[in-house]
Length: 224
DNA sequence: GCGACAG
DNA sequence: ATCTTGTCGC
Image (tube, rainbow, N blue to C red; front, side):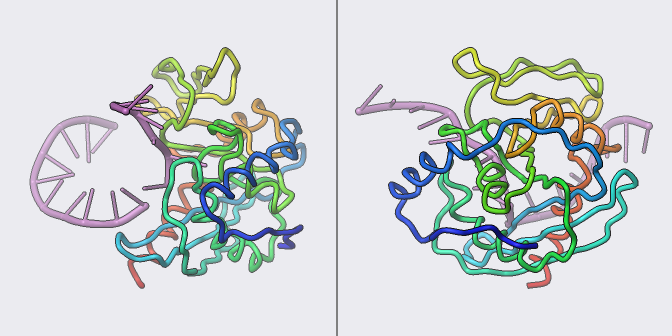
C-alpha cells in the first residue's frame, strides 16, 4: 500500500503528545463504506524483554472472509509502552508492514482504540490518518470513558461515554463473552464501524480481521 | 497528591 | 503485550 506521508516517531513522550494534539484535527469521523471487497486486520506482538516488534497485516475478502494476503515484519523499537502513546511504540512496525501490502483494503481493523482515547487519537485513528484509509479501533478493554454492561446476547451494545459524549460503543460480539470496545478510527462513522465489527465477528469474540492478525502475530513471535 | 492506565 | 496447566463446556 502507498503511505501518504509519515512523520518522525522517535520523539519524547511530551513531543508525542503535542503531535497527537496536532494530528487530531485531521481525523474524519464520518463515512459509509458501501462496496466493501477487502478488509484488513493489523496487530503487533513481542517477547517480554525484547524491543523487537513483530507487526502483521492480514487481508481478507469480504463478505466471505477468506484470507487473501498475509504480511509480517520485525522492527526494533526504542519507545516503551505508555498508555495513550501506543502508536509511538507499534506504529513504525505497522507502517512498515503496510508498505509491503499489495492489496487495497477498504477498511482496516486495529487492535486498540480509535477516538476513545484521552486525546481523541488512539492507534487506530493515528494509523488511519497516515495510511489515509478508513479504520476501526477494536479494543479488549477501556482506556478512557465508561460504558454500562451491554445485554448478554450477540449484537447488544451500550455507548462508551465521556463527559456525556459518545466516543464509542461496547459491543457484545458473542453471547456471554466480554464485550469489545469499538470506536471510530478515521473516515468512517461509528454506526458503520459497529456494523462491520458485527458482520465480521463470526463465532468468536474478536472480529475475524483482528483475530487472524492475532494468530499470525503470535505465530511469528514464537518462531523468532 | 493519588489512582487509572489500549497493547 | 507476555507469563502458564488444567479445566469447564459445546
